[in-house]
Amino acid sequence: MLKSKVIYLIFFICMLQFFSVPIFSKESQDCNKKIEFILVYVEQTWERRDGWIGEIFNDVVVELLFMSPKETLQWLTEKPKILKDFLEDMDGRVFVAVGVEELEKIIKKKKNVISILENFKTKKPELNEVRNKILKRVKETQIRIMN
Image (cartoon, rainbow, N blue to C red; front, top):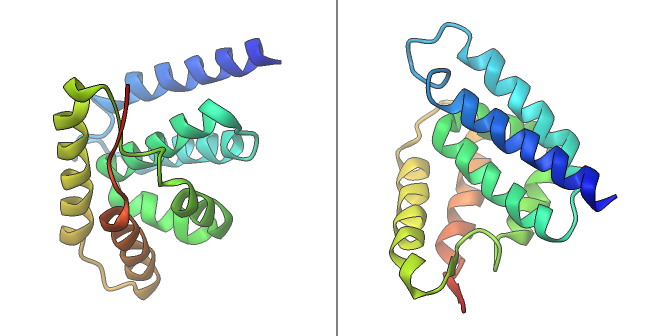
């Protein structure tokens, strides 16, 4: 069971790495289709997550916010269970530095998430509602250091 989860996770991470450089550029015509593909994959995996895999997938949702805030917020609007879980699991899972040496990186990551969400503009009230929920939660969440 654990072996299949690890293989599944490695495949997902490789896929995300492969797609992240050329596909998420503004020039890409089918960027939305590829993001939708990744979101479907995340959704399917989210339903089966547990333990450390859950920690990784919370981080993946944050990475998707960096890559494509509009599509990710739209997806979270349509998936209230995932949004609820993501918001509840944020403490101790998203902004965690492994050792003091990683602290600056996590501080920067948190500031970047806040910046992306604060600068995201839309006329869709449902996207603004989700954005505001995530933004509030990110601001409330403390950075944790694991030794």
